[in-house]
Image: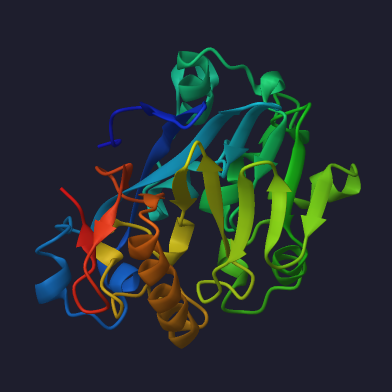
Length: 290
């Protein structure tokens, strides 16, 4: 079942933010929780008959002063039915659109209105919607007037995959953008535009980044795959997909402590139910605040 609601909105400082559910995804629960035993993780997210757990693919649209800014883009429309079955991708919207496009339409925004797209990293379920395939089979930018922002190191890592990482990186999601001169590369911690900054959060990939959003004294953090769901808040609950899990551990230790201290609103990309929450606790007991 595709997670609902399609759009969850809130006022954030002087901007309006919209968490858009770009579709459902089902991945193997063991892979999603790494060394954590099934007897523990299944209490939080039950598995289906194929041992898969229900996830979302949540993007974030910010009504920024410069125009609509979109963080991550879901899985897009370019993969085939077999691929969708393997990864449990459910992202078809109305009349041939994707659910991300449906969500944008619901808040009155067209793809051509988006002025900036920021990628946390370039795995297919985060960057697949960067580009789209038209009826002729040609691949083009989904957001024709947007600049695309990503870590230079992530792009290099994505375009030089190895046997373990190749299954997550698909060149048609980002190479056409680079060839068209549409990408603005950043390196490491970096301000992007007023109120939105990149913070390196390595571990899932070496150049994974989170996005810190600040407005009117409030702070939100798009945490992406560092903490994909609220069930992953405990420090050792780390995905088997992470290429550097011990680096993830130290990144989580640093980021979650800061999130509590500075009262951040965390945006959870893959949680099927919870779009965002502040957290409480310490290194042993981090949990979403109810």
